[in-house]
Length: 447
Image 1 (tube, rainbow, N blue to C red):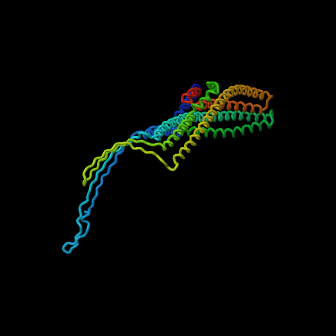
Image 2 (cartoon, rainbow, N blue to C red):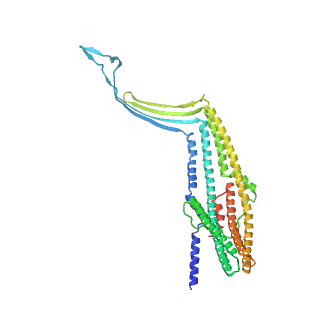
Image 3 (cartoon, one colour):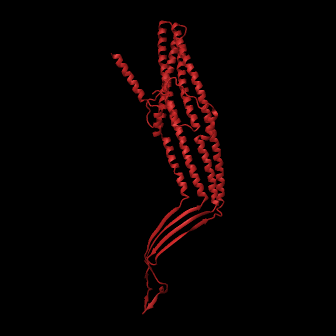
């Protein structure tokens, strides 16, 4: 009666641990909420979305109000009485009059640009700047997907390496114990024991390194999601990874050169540079404004006065010390720089797409080859164990076969992770990576 109960408890504990394991989509949602780099990009987008409003403001009317309220206290001497006089032998000062005055003034003015080529170019630049901010944020979204997936699979890779090392340690421990027993009964030499001991000492050192690497990978993932990582859902054994579609590199490279968000942002920067040239050349052009103003002045000494005016003002620049010409030459050079930056970004995106495509196709072939190698390694290990038991194989043969099997299994899982990551990088380079692309990968995990 005890055995079924224990089995149920063990199964329940195993299911509970699996239920607590976070999958790729859950980790990505945590990164969306907590990643500082993504939060910074989101704030930059919010700031960039104000560009059009700011650029359009220069084309709209400017209305302002002003006023003053002044009190003057003093006296004045009339001009014809501003001399001293002598009356009946006494010096008489000139008479003084009160000069107190209260002035209350307020005015309202309006200015509407009728022709200002520089302000128009600024408005066009603002629309391009906002589009650049949106493209930059879209690139940040794709970068987050890639960073989360890479950190997730780095943890799984480190876990697989540790599991493989620990399994190899167990097998080496058993082989060491067997070598010692056989040496004691005289069926094997001390050399077999020394070889098994050396293999055991090496795998212990590798275990410490694997534990440290796993801690580092978990910390790297924690930096992105902003909290300590729970157990991660591993990749199911024997999964089939879908090949890239379309199954040719040229469409991916073409898409990268035109739709990659970094390329889009670089192209927008070229257009902004063109507008900057036109904006600086506009400083040679006249400007025309509609102006209107109304003013009311009330003085205690003189009464009230109302004044209204409406008309057109214009300005024609004549000479400013060659500053405008120099600024135009500067912006022309900056436009050429923006064009070169665009070419460099296109080439980098095309190279990334090409490398990711080749990495994915070669990864799929490598996975298939390693799957066959795993089967062969298992058969080799079984054969060496049997040969060791009957005396036709020595201890080192079994150790080498074990090492080969665990190394093949570790390489196989790493090849699967790298192939999946190259698929994500390929879509990111082509500008088509979205959160929905994580769903089929998440379906490959153990839930």
